Amino acid sequence: MPFIDSVDKAHDAARRINDAFKAEGKRPIIFSTLIQAELSKIIEASNGMVMDLIHTFVIPLEQEFGVKSTHTVGRSHNIADSDDYKNRIEAINFSLAHDDGQSHKNLAMADVILVGVSRSGKTPTTLYLAMQYGIKAANYPLIPEDFERGKLPSGLLSFKDKIFGLSIAPDRLSEVRNERRPGSKYASLENCRYEINEAEAMMRREGIQWMSSTTKSIEEIATMILQEIKSDKRAY
Amino acid sequence: MPFIDSVDKAHDAARRINDAFKAEGKRPIIFSTLIQAELSKIIEASNGMVMDLIHTFVIPLEQEFGVKSTHTVGRSHNIADSDDYKNRIEAINFSLAHDDGQSHKNLAMADVILVGVSRSGKTPTTLYLAMQYGIKAANYPLIPEDFERGKLPSGLLSFKDKIFGLSIAPDRLSEVRNERRPGSKYASLENCRYEINEAEAMMRREGIQWMSSTTKSIEEIATMILQEIKSDKRAY
Image (cartoon, rainbow over all chains, first blue to last red; front, side):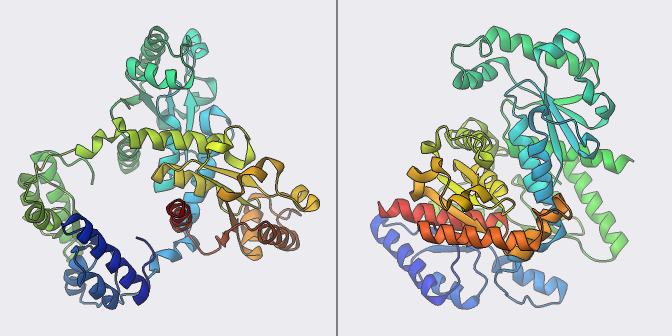
């Protein structure tokens, strides 16, 4: 229940908690991030079991820092003006413009370039990296023409140090592709096996770091890529 | 510091915490989400001030539910197989395919269609809605041709109930557009004022709900839109 910022809204929330308790006969578990003591008290007086995610930590933090919290609501909402926020929006625009090998322009500005066969998870991962961390992430598909030539797409050759590969289990890839183009050669297990074999062989040959996205969420893939980028930067 | 999943890595983390303490003369504040007691103990024995985001809440939850936590690491990583996760990936693909009025196809499947002038924040918001909530969000620019005709783009007329508008203060819009095309008519304050006036007049005339994105982050805009969608659904 977002935007609980008045006594009325807090009472309304407490009423809904109490209704749920009545209907289910069990205390609803409430995770609260309210910071105004007046509103917290109203929720705490309900029939819910309240886990206070803010005050639980704010009190020891106040002691540690020797400073009282101002308990001001909405401070995070100023982020729209910050440089960090602008970087994130800029990174989203960059990642969109460099999705699926659309543009070779400004690749020098990319923080990371993901490569992999079609449907290996590149696009959602680049968008997540941009949106969450402000990372300028381009992505490039590895396609059958690249495998025939036996070389990375030529636009990428000068950026090898920031290329990161994604692979995926052939049967999983076939499943995903079949949802998009059922029964196609593109989606067939045989073709998926061929593409994955070729892509992994190419990444090994070119010395590109890569990981399998088969059982990983975009959050997890992004965090792993971030670790690689950071540890590279640290090494410089 | 992600992926601390062994005694060695925990000791390494504790060492870095102790180094920071030595360098700064102040206890580093550690927010820990470790769930293995063995690893938590190593971090707690460091010179950091540890705020344990998991055990602080897990213990009362165990009591409330009458069930012991299995303290298993990595459970959230199974999400890549869940329907929720597939919906999110599908929503991202949908939102990309329907970015900036690219396609009229399957608009009936959209959960929400954002409209607004160029650079009012539609694209990042639709991607966030898709990525975070699995909402299929299309977006459509309102352009000078629409204002001359005095009508919404014709492809949208049958979907008025799921259209949501974004507006923005003219001076902020001019600032954002000037970053992209410095000194252009497109970015001029006069033109931005004209487009915003026309867009807001059109949304009012067509009875479209809208909000200003000027001081709001994409997280906040998305949460507000979500509230509108949900309360609509609840009303049916």
